[in-house]
Image (cartoon, rainbow, N blue to C red; front, side, top):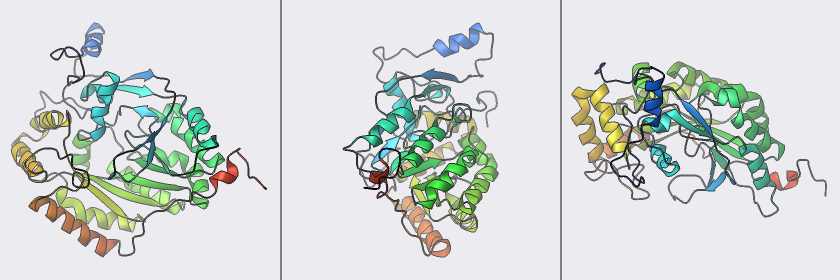
Length: 357
């Protein structure tokens, strides 16, 4: 690792220019100037929280290979700083960059619970699972203070509405009381993201996420509370975590995971540049090997946008990954069943209480 250039505690190692900017060569430097004015090191990118007030928060997902129809993200941007995160590109639509801006400028939707309640109470709304964190993690650090996600779960419980959760933060343990109540009516499913068993890998790949120990503990506690939990090993990055598929599958099966899913890394949009810069600062001796193997998974490119193929990759290396997962599932998850949440109760609770007639 190049310690002279590495920005500790951040995934992206540089600010990345917004491709939608009118001035193609202008880099946003307002936050950098602020740091300098405060006589702070330019390496200490403090996180800034910005309130926004959307008119709607439930989004219809149009991508056919994502596995969800509706999503809700109480936060835009994510302080976890996972260097590979596909959601980085979405920060450009808000006028920020996909690099350090994505993890240091967090947009907050404090009115999300009220907007959710309005949406699912509407007479024309038909219950269908809404996924929290379809884009960014609903349990990222600021949630500990703001509790927007907890308030959203209270709304889902009040109206008996199904909800799916994707997270890599142990903070979800705080809400086991609500989640267990939802689980009694089969109204919740949790997908915990665990990409590695190696803490050293986690620290550089996902710098502000919960430790591996805490995530495994979270998996165990959720399942002990009767909350159905599966694990997503996403993404698989050749020569970084691809060798951990079988050991990870064994470990999570011991702790009660219902199933194991995965995707192969793809570096779409600005993420290719961000990831390449990260490799130069963290794994310079393996940079070319890793990039070449990623390209072998995507028809010679760092990204593949073809629906159905983009998540799983193609070619020899991708085939090897598929085979390892097939073996892992056969050995450790022989009775895997797809999670189906209950959509039948909501109509009876649309006014917040059970309708007798």
